[in-house]
Image (cartoon, rainbow, N blue to C red):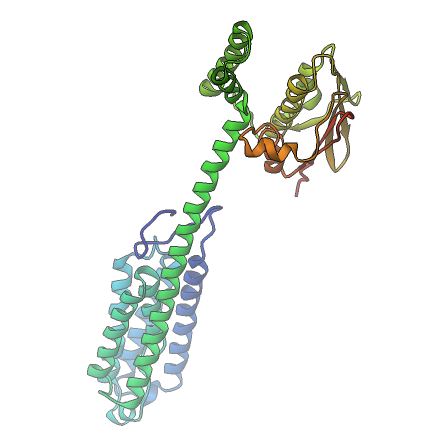
Length: 382
């Protein structure tokens, strides 16, 4: 699982996917195919052995073990060191036994062992469980068994041992890299999630607290006004700290009912006659973005400015437009505000829509007011 030490099991990246699990499935499949090859190979030559019945007994036991352990080789958690040790025991036993039940002429001619390439599956299992070092250990044990129990030091033996060591170490190294990459990806996703949470918290308050503190620092504003602003921010912070009732993902909310709280003598809401249903979190975030836009009108457009909220419910998306008749703002004003640390537009509006997979467009010019267009795509059921 995520955060597990390499060499002691697999790691799962975000979303529950793992790079190494397909490799384990390939190892498990390889063991079954290698067993079938060993049985067919022995079937074609068992009459040439000194003790053919002994060979059939070993291959029968090997078949039972391979089938019984197939599920264990589906992943690093199930494939314990006990399983791997037993697997290695079968491989060594079959190799040494081959030198006992076969004829000397066949052995010197390079006849394969009873398990043949099945022994490579053992080395690959050690590679998947412990990395390239354990693969080298298992490969060395199999190599020593070949030299000591079946043929001695011959070109064929050395060639097969080198290939087995290279394949096992390569697979082990690849799995180690996969685990390290998945662990790094998991850490990166955790950092991203923490960053998004900080951005969400900043949107809920946006720059209201900073504005009050700036007024106090500059000595501007009437005491009564400062007291009112401080009270508003205190209530907002308390609400944020205590939290509100979480909205379920599948809970449908009527966007119009939520936006209706912003309508007053200065803000007009125009919407369809039927409810505009959206998933709970989407409706809540879109409503908060609209609230930030309306709040900007009340703060920056002047005491007599009016605003209009238009909701358009389309099959593909829901669009909410907020337009005011205030003085507007010159080009470059939003960039200056963001550089100064005021996050009303960049986070409270654009940030929210970006997280929803939507868009937020702002249009303005001096003397012509501001128009904010928020568009959220509807999620289609697969």
